[in-house]
Length: 357
Ligand code: HEC
Ligand code: HEC
Ligand code: HEC
Image (cartoon, rainbow, N blue to C red):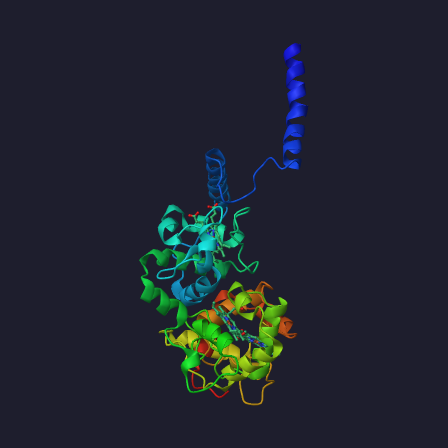
């Protein structure tokens, strides 16, 4: 009987004691002295177990798509290296005093499976400062980052720079851009020729200015979501956006992909582009997307990377791609396209490098 009474007192008393301890400030929340060993062990144990368990529900692709490496590397240089460091890049002493300290990922990624890395990068880790991916529902971008993390341990400082910085300095050219700092950030992914580095970063060169401005505004307002574009558009003033759009629109279009694509795929794509699929109510794409007289807010697709076009059409199809006030036109058209249609029409437009604007 006495024992039961003690347990009851303990059950009520302990939480009160802990609450009282917190109220008088007994628990040291300072990061300077580190965690108690047992706390540190428990937090790591809980984090690793949670990642392992939640990653069981992640459907990892058999092979990681490497076409997004330049975009992911560009994002890593600005969005991740500040905490995790990068080849040839020292971290600020302030970051090294974070608790827990962000690990050097080149040394730790081997401990995780692809699915586990996906889980961490997509959702972040609570109570540690490790942020979630800046855009929801962009699993394609998170997978591109996982592919990059797999490369990271193999890269030396020069290779990392080449992958993440385009190797060239846009600000050093004889064209004096209106906003050199912002432009240097854009070219790390879009290239100083505006051609788009890797298959998943769109070419901007020769795209019409109104479409570029409207798209930048859509990213800034959150009407179009992309983790890769979220950082670059943050803090850019409206007149800087206009200057950047003008800059890229004035660059001459560059030839797109030269993948070997079967002729019958291209001709199927050409048919969809020029005639549409009347039995499924799919309109001809060319009416809006080609020719010098089209509405300047309708994007040019000629010579655009096939992988990028495919990804955008799939996003439209699942309503994961907003954009300008006209995005719904595309969602309706894309919902009637099969994967094969998408591949064919994307390959067709990508192959039209020399097409008129
Ligand atoms: C504000 C600092 C910060 C930023 C920015 C950040 N991280 Fe982290 N990250 C952390 C911290 C802290 C941990 C350690 C968590 C722990 O040990 O519980 C971590 C852990 C990780 C891990 C698990 C590694 C391991 O072995 O424990 C991965 C993978 C990771 N981050 C990837 C990224 C990527 C990719 C980005 C950029 C998109 C990024 N992080 C941006 C702070 C950051
Ligand atoms: C980290 C890489 C990265 C950086 C830096 C970057 N972009 Fe992008 N950009 C992308 C990717 C990837 C996409 C496609 C995103 C999507 O799926 O919506 C994109 C899309 C765009 C689009 C839409 C193009 C279209 O055809 O719809 C515009 C416009 C754009 N970027 C302009 C810029 C400008 C201007 C800057 C500099 C302020 C910049 N980007 C910096 C990677 C980047
Ligand atoms: C009635 C006009 C119209 C028709 C027809 C049309 N589109 Fe579009 N398309 C648009 C508009 C407008 C946008 C820009 C949407 C936005 O970002 O807000 C767009 C965007 C796109 C994009 C994204 C480009 C980029 O740079 O991000 C692709 C890919 C695309 N369309 C493919 C197609 C295909 C394939 C067809 C034919 C099956 C088609 N479109 C038919 C108006 C049209």
